[in-house]
Every structure is written in structure tokens, then in C-alpha cells.
Image: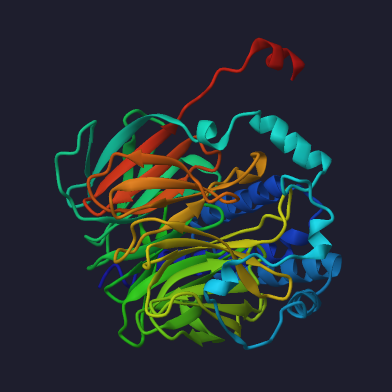
Length: 493
């Protein structure tokens, strides 16, 4: 009781909530700033860091609220009101509510005369940036590019916060359900487990060291996500709660209970606003929450047919894609100001099968034609959809791999635009990691090292390390083979 009536924790929490609102305001206007994308992220990261440090001094929250109002007035005067920007972006969202069933006949790729005339024979846009991208990748084939030379095994013992490093699998631990590198940081790796804990590892040392353990959930952690600035982690658990963590210290900053008593299955930060998170539960409900208040956004709810197993945003954060346990994908338009959801389309992929993973990737920025959606399905397929301008989709490729019951997560290879081709990667229930060529559908590589189903795979942003985890609690870090660069090329560069 004495701790509850102390002034410092109360003032700190109020300052922290206002600090998150300030960062959220800066994030909304960040697209208007005439800066490179990397500098925009660095600006937000530094702003958030300074606000977090100042919040610890327990200053009067009223001062920060006044600053928030003044900051909003200054940004509005410089870049214009947010309402007009939101209306322009939302006007591009189609409000059609069609139901689309993808049959075998839809696997054939439709022709688009508008795009085909601008493509080279290899399917790449012949621009200077595209040529520069291929020059960076060299003449290596996809199989040569995704060759691996070594691996490390990490045994993540959440119960005693211990970790062993070995080269043989000799123990059976609670399954590691999800694994993710921090955004644009190959030295921070987080893992979620069925024992209810999350672990954050530092890869600076060899073997990797355990930075902190996030304890609080009483049942399995099904999903988690890093914030844009990597300062926070949001997690969804079968205990029916969602928790917001401070990634550096492991402290739980907020807990959100599911009002319907359902299991929390999926969660995502908004790609441009740390103050907005989206949750999906076992009853098929999808809700948008305000992190500062911990309350659901009015009008920010939606309903799927089955359990909401997987979530992903498009690059702008204005469209949310949801995969459910009945084989359907739902798309929703998200109002960036109010947080309200508007249902756009339903896509029936495979009736009665679970869609365990969704990943969005924009390919139009360099050598690509259309944005794409990667879907893992329990009918033993990995499907790649192309998203059209009107919001419709068609199947570009279907890859076969062992996947019939487990919740397996797949991923795009992050440097696909730098290669003469593109790859996707996924785990399999046979304990292998599969690499597929997007254009030809061929199996590029197959990594064997796990002794149980591989539940999740993720890349470091520069593709130097691939991480995979399995149902026995083993995490493997696969190291890319580094080829020496000829001296002639070094002098030319």
C-alpha cells in the first residue's frame, strides 16, 4: 500500500503516457518531413529516447500536456492539419465488400498490359536504381547467395533465465513459438515461448548473451512485435492478456485484458505509430487499442469468421490484413487519425484450413510490379499473392512444404530487391527450413538442423543471420557464407 501512494511512480506513468502521445504526434507528421527514410527513423528514435529519460525525473505532467498542445499547433501550422491528410489517404481505399473465392483456375497469372510494357525480359523494371541493385548483388545465383557456413544453438531456459551454447541438440524445452530481430538491428533478438515468458538476446558476444527475460504471462505467448523504435515489445498470450514491455529493462508497462475472456493470439504495432496496437483473439475479434490509455479505440473493432491467427499492415499502415483459422483473409481500412476499422474484402484461400502467418512486402519501390502478401496455410502450401491497385489479389505462386497442423510463420527475404530474382523462406514440420524462388517456384535451399517442427523463421535486416526456432525450444542462428570480393572489384568501387 505504501508503494501505491508514493508520488514518483504516479508522476512517471503520467509523464510516460504524455511522452508516447508526443512521439505519436511526431510520427504522424514524419512523412511530411523532407528527410531520407533512415534519418526519419533516427529522429523518432532519438526523440523517444529523450522523452523517456525526461519522464523519469517525475516532472509535472501538466507541463508536458501544454507542450503537446503547442507541438500540435506548430506542426499543424507548418505541414497542415492531419484531417485533410487522412481524407486524402482514406479516399484511395476501396470500400467494396466482395467475397472472393480462389479456385484452382485462379492460379494462372492474369496479364496486365499497363505493367508488361515497362518490364524487361527478366521481369524487372529497367531503371538505374535496378541496375545498381543488381550490381550490389553481383552475378551470384540465388542458391549461391543463400548458402550458409555455420550455425549456433541457443537453449532458452525461461524458468531460470539460463542459456547454454552447444553444437548438439540434447534437451527438450518448451516450444519457442515466435522469434524476431529488432527493426534494423541485427544485434537484438527476442523469443517467445509456451512457458509464458519472452527472452531478449544480445548477439554482440559469442555465444549470444541473455539480456533480460520478460515475465508476467501465465500461459503460452502466441505472438509479439517490436515497436518502430525498438524501445517497446507488445505480446499476446493464451492467458487472455496483452502486455506492453520496456525492451531494455524487461519491465511491464501496461496490461490489457481481453474483455470477452478469449485467448489473445496475434498482435502488431502500427508501422508508424507506437501508440497504436492491434490485437486478434480466439473468437475472431480484431481490436485497435491506444497504448497510452490502454483502452480500445471507438469504432476500431472487427470480426472474422474464425480465430484471428495472424496480422500484418501494409507499408503505409492504412490497410490491415487478418488471417483466420477458417482459411480466409480479411482486409480492413484503418483511419490513421481516429483508429477506426472499415472492412474492405474477404478472400477465401483454403476453406477449413488455418492461415498461420501473413507477411506484407512492397515490391514497387525498385524492381517490383505490385505489393505482395505471403500466406502460410495448413493445407501444406505457402502462397504468394500479388495485390492489385483496386485492392484485389491473385495468386502468383504456390509452394509445397510439410505444414498441416502447427502454427508456422514464414517470411520474405529482406534483400530480395537487390537480387536477380527473389526468395521466400519458411519452416516445415519435418524440421527443415525451406527457401523458394518466387519466379520459378523452385526449391533454392533446404537447411536441416532441427529435430522437431520449425515454427518460425526471421532474418536480420541485412540478411547476415537467419534465426529459426522449433517446437522443442531450440533456436538456431544460421550464418550466411561470406564470399571474398576480388581486388579488381574493390578498386573499381
